Image (cartoon, rainbow, N blue to C red; front, side, top):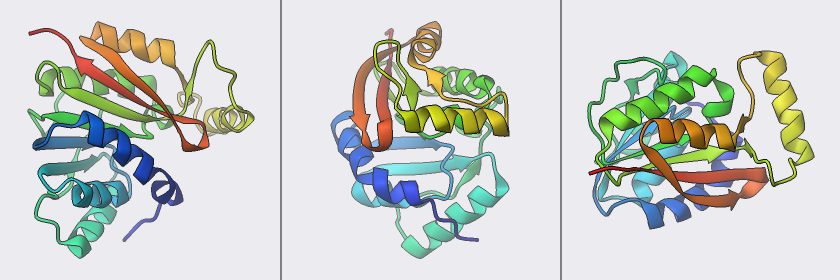
Length: 199
Protein backbone atom coordinates (compact mmCIF):
# COMPACT_ATOMS: atom_id res chain seq x y z
CA UNK A 1 0.00 0.00 0.00
CA UNK A 2 1.35 3.39 -1.02
CA UNK A 3 1.91 5.65 1.97
CA UNK A 4 1.97 9.43 2.20
CA UNK A 5 3.83 11.55 4.74
CA UNK A 6 2.78 15.22 4.50
CA UNK A 7 6.07 16.34 6.06
CA UNK A 8 8.00 14.76 3.19
CA UNK A 9 6.60 17.27 0.69
CA UNK A 10 7.47 20.15 3.02
CA UNK A 11 11.04 19.19 3.85
CA UNK A 12 12.31 17.44 0.74
CA UNK A 13 13.56 20.57 -1.04
CA UNK A 14 15.51 21.93 1.99
CA UNK A 15 17.02 18.48 2.61
CA UNK A 16 17.99 18.18 -1.05
CA UNK A 17 19.67 21.59 -0.92
CA UNK A 18 21.94 20.44 1.91
CA UNK A 19 22.62 17.09 0.25
CA UNK A 20 23.66 18.84 -2.96
CA UNK A 21 26.51 20.43 -0.99
CA UNK A 22 27.47 17.35 1.05
CA UNK A 23 27.08 14.23 -1.09
CA UNK A 24 29.72 13.06 -3.58
CA UNK A 25 29.02 13.22 -7.29
CA UNK A 26 28.51 9.46 -7.53
CA UNK A 27 28.27 6.40 -5.31
CA UNK A 28 25.79 4.50 -3.16
CA UNK A 29 23.56 6.34 -0.71
CA UNK A 30 22.21 4.16 2.08
CA UNK A 31 18.98 5.63 3.43
CA UNK A 32 18.08 4.24 6.87
CA UNK A 33 14.41 4.34 7.93
CA UNK A 34 13.07 5.42 4.54
CA UNK A 35 9.45 5.45 5.71
CA UNK A 36 6.91 5.82 2.90
CA UNK A 37 9.60 6.03 0.21
CA UNK A 38 8.68 9.54 -0.95
CA UNK A 39 12.09 10.95 -0.05
CA UNK A 40 13.84 8.08 -1.80
CA UNK A 41 12.00 8.70 -5.05
CA UNK A 42 12.43 12.47 -4.90
CA UNK A 43 16.13 12.32 -4.06
CA UNK A 44 16.96 9.53 -6.51
CA UNK A 45 15.37 11.69 -9.21
CA UNK A 46 17.21 14.81 -8.01
CA UNK A 47 20.60 13.02 -7.92
CA UNK A 48 20.61 10.67 -10.93
CA UNK A 49 24.32 9.85 -10.66
CA UNK A 50 23.88 8.46 -7.14
CA UNK A 51 22.48 5.00 -6.51
CA UNK A 52 19.82 5.13 -3.78
CA UNK A 53 19.30 2.20 -1.40
CA UNK A 54 16.14 2.64 0.69
CA UNK A 55 15.63 0.55 3.82
CA UNK A 56 13.16 0.23 6.66
CA UNK A 57 12.53 -2.16 9.53
CA UNK A 58 8.76 -2.01 8.99
CA UNK A 59 7.06 -4.33 6.50
CA UNK A 60 4.35 -1.81 5.62
CA UNK A 61 6.95 0.90 4.98
CA UNK A 62 8.90 -1.34 2.63
CA UNK A 63 5.70 -2.20 0.77
CA UNK A 64 5.01 1.52 0.33
CA UNK A 65 8.57 2.15 -0.86
CA UNK A 66 8.19 -0.65 -3.40
CA UNK A 67 5.03 0.93 -4.86
CA UNK A 68 6.60 4.39 -5.08
CA UNK A 69 9.68 2.85 -6.69
CA UNK A 70 7.69 0.88 -9.26
CA UNK A 71 5.68 3.95 -10.25
CA UNK A 72 8.79 6.12 -10.54
CA UNK A 73 10.75 3.65 -12.67
CA UNK A 74 14.10 5.20 -11.77
CA UNK A 75 17.15 3.12 -12.72
CA UNK A 76 19.18 4.40 -9.75
CA UNK A 77 16.58 3.53 -7.08
CA UNK A 78 17.09 0.04 -5.68
CA UNK A 79 14.48 -2.23 -4.12
CA UNK A 80 13.94 -1.61 -0.39
CA UNK A 81 15.78 -3.80 2.10
CA UNK A 82 14.79 -4.73 5.67
CA UNK A 83 17.15 -2.91 8.04
CA UNK A 84 16.80 -2.46 11.78
CA UNK A 85 19.24 0.29 12.75
CA UNK A 86 19.68 -1.22 16.21
CA UNK A 87 20.68 -4.63 14.84
CA UNK A 88 24.36 -5.61 14.80
CA UNK A 89 24.11 -7.00 11.27
CA UNK A 90 22.91 -4.92 8.33
CA UNK A 91 22.03 -6.16 4.82
CA UNK A 92 24.35 -3.52 3.32
CA UNK A 93 28.06 -3.86 4.01
CA UNK A 94 29.35 -0.63 2.47
CA UNK A 95 28.06 2.72 1.27
CA UNK A 96 29.52 6.03 0.16
CA UNK A 97 27.16 8.10 2.27
CA UNK A 98 24.15 7.66 4.54
CA UNK A 99 20.92 9.54 5.18
CA UNK A 100 18.51 9.12 8.07
CA UNK A 101 15.39 11.31 8.28
CA UNK A 102 13.13 11.50 11.33
CA UNK A 103 14.18 8.25 13.01
CA UNK A 104 16.23 9.06 16.09
CA UNK A 105 13.34 10.61 18.04
CA UNK A 106 10.78 7.96 17.02
CA UNK A 107 12.82 4.99 18.20
CA UNK A 108 14.70 3.88 21.32
CA UNK A 109 18.17 5.31 21.92
CA UNK A 110 19.67 1.96 20.93
CA UNK A 111 18.56 2.71 17.35
CA UNK A 112 20.71 5.85 17.36
CA UNK A 113 23.58 3.85 18.81
CA UNK A 114 23.11 1.22 16.11
CA UNK A 115 22.91 3.87 13.41
CA UNK A 116 26.31 5.31 14.25
CA UNK A 117 27.83 1.87 14.80
CA UNK A 118 26.52 0.76 11.41
CA UNK A 119 27.78 3.92 9.76
CA UNK A 120 31.21 3.26 11.25
CA UNK A 121 31.17 -0.21 9.64
CA UNK A 122 29.81 0.89 6.25
CA UNK A 123 31.32 4.27 5.46
CA UNK A 124 34.85 5.10 4.35
CA UNK A 125 36.80 7.87 6.10
CA UNK A 126 35.47 11.32 5.29
CA UNK A 127 32.07 10.05 4.19
CA UNK A 128 28.94 11.83 5.46
CA UNK A 129 26.14 10.58 7.68
CA UNK A 130 23.31 13.09 7.27
CA UNK A 131 20.55 13.31 9.89
CA UNK A 132 17.32 15.30 9.77
CA UNK A 133 14.85 15.91 12.55
CA UNK A 134 14.17 17.89 15.74
CA UNK A 135 16.84 18.19 18.43
CA UNK A 136 17.19 19.87 21.81
CA UNK A 137 20.09 22.32 22.15
CA UNK A 138 21.42 23.76 25.38
CA UNK A 139 21.88 27.27 23.97
CA UNK A 140 18.73 27.41 21.84
CA UNK A 141 15.24 27.85 23.28
CA UNK A 142 13.06 24.85 22.43
CA UNK A 143 10.08 25.80 20.28
CA UNK A 144 6.69 25.17 21.95
CA UNK A 145 5.74 22.87 19.08
CA UNK A 146 8.81 20.74 19.74
CA UNK A 147 8.10 20.62 23.49
CA UNK A 148 4.58 19.41 22.73
CA UNK A 149 5.87 16.93 20.17
CA UNK A 150 8.41 15.58 22.66
CA UNK A 151 5.68 15.08 25.28
CA UNK A 152 3.46 13.28 22.77
CA UNK A 153 6.30 10.99 21.72
CA UNK A 154 7.07 10.02 25.31
CA UNK A 155 3.38 9.43 25.96
CA UNK A 156 3.32 6.97 23.07
CA UNK A 157 6.55 5.26 24.12
CA UNK A 158 8.74 6.31 27.07
CA UNK A 159 11.84 5.20 25.11
CA UNK A 160 11.10 7.78 22.41
CA UNK A 161 11.65 11.53 22.49
CA UNK A 162 13.54 14.42 20.94
CA UNK A 163 17.24 13.87 21.63
CA UNK A 164 19.71 16.32 23.08
CA UNK A 165 22.17 17.32 20.37
CA UNK A 166 25.04 17.09 22.85
CA UNK A 167 24.20 13.42 23.43
CA UNK A 168 24.13 12.76 19.69
CA UNK A 169 27.46 14.53 19.24
CA UNK A 170 28.95 12.47 22.07
CA UNK A 171 27.67 9.24 20.54
CA UNK A 172 29.08 10.28 17.17
CA UNK A 173 32.49 10.90 18.70
CA UNK A 174 32.47 7.50 20.39
CA UNK A 175 31.86 5.91 16.98
CA UNK A 176 34.53 7.89 15.13
CA UNK A 177 32.43 10.71 13.67
CA UNK A 178 32.62 14.47 14.02
CA UNK A 179 29.81 16.91 13.28
CA UNK A 180 30.72 19.24 10.44
CA UNK A 181 27.41 20.99 9.80
CA UNK A 182 24.26 22.19 11.53
CA UNK A 183 21.60 23.75 9.31
CA UNK A 184 18.26 25.09 10.56
CA UNK A 185 15.33 23.65 8.61
CA UNK A 186 11.56 24.18 8.37
CA UNK A 187 9.27 23.42 11.34
CA UNK A 188 12.08 23.75 13.94
CA UNK A 189 14.10 20.84 12.56
CA UNK A 190 17.82 20.55 11.87
CA UNK A 191 19.95 18.86 9.27
CA UNK A 192 23.17 17.58 10.82
CA UNK A 193 26.16 16.27 8.92
CA UNK A 194 28.65 13.94 10.61
CA UNK A 195 31.76 12.78 8.83
CA UNK A 196 33.81 9.72 9.60
CA UNK A 197 37.24 10.66 10.92
CA UNK A 198 40.48 8.74 10.57
CA UNK A 199 42.48 7.48 7.64
